Length: 67
Image (cartoon, rainbow, N blue to C red):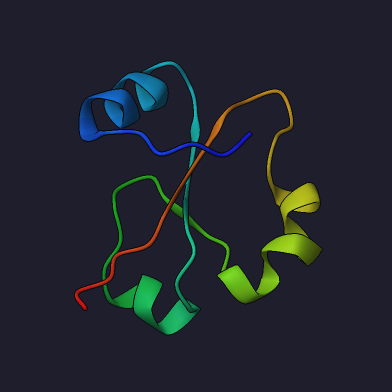
């Protein structure tokens, strides 16, 4: 179930083995992303998440937006 988490919770989840997913387009991911993050653009997430994410591990999804 999706929920918002703060920075400390993100760190705790990642330390416990969560998967980190950046959902911006590939060109923006290539420009800058958090260390260890995989790219799964929001436009492809429904179609590709099942093939690239491990179902047994939590997922932290983020999007860097300066707007």
